[in-house]
Image 1 (cartoon, rainbow, N blue to C red):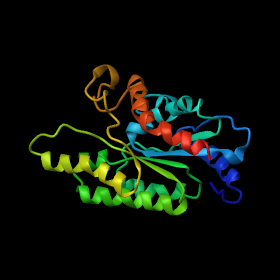
Image 2: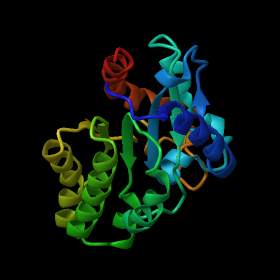
Image 3: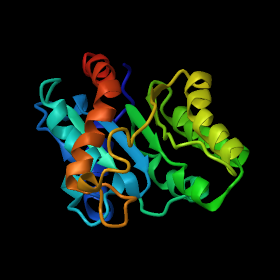
Length: 224
């Protein structure tokens, strides 16, 4: 993949900045900084990690998964609790001056809680994807979806919301994690007392759900 001039400097800077303002980056030691591959996770509290150490949140657990792939991966977790897609649109531009190799987008569930029209959520997510691709044409996009039981009186809304993630993945030729919370939702052993946010044990399951989709992408990106 063609590198932009001084790209390695930007990658080193982004790791430092995010360590100060976001969850600390999980970076393997690369022998050549110019070869660092950045996985940028942009999500809400489900990726930020609530009431646990930032290192226990699933994005940071990816660092261990990536070790067999190679030493050149850096995971940046720019997730923020309570973030809607609208808020994500406001937050994203401050991060886009830095190179991204894999963009992992996990947003939307707070929109659903607020009853924001699915069409608006879809448009916001698409705008974020477009912005990342404009700055990083070779970046691989991964969309992290959610599945919810479909029951009246909100069945039509929930069905449209769940379908939205697959539609975005197809339109953008993106990878799709169908359900981040698979095997976690509803299990008291894997969730905090609020029954919404996974605990540290739950995040160990979340990272497996993501890794099933991310692993082949990481091998491909790491070989470039």
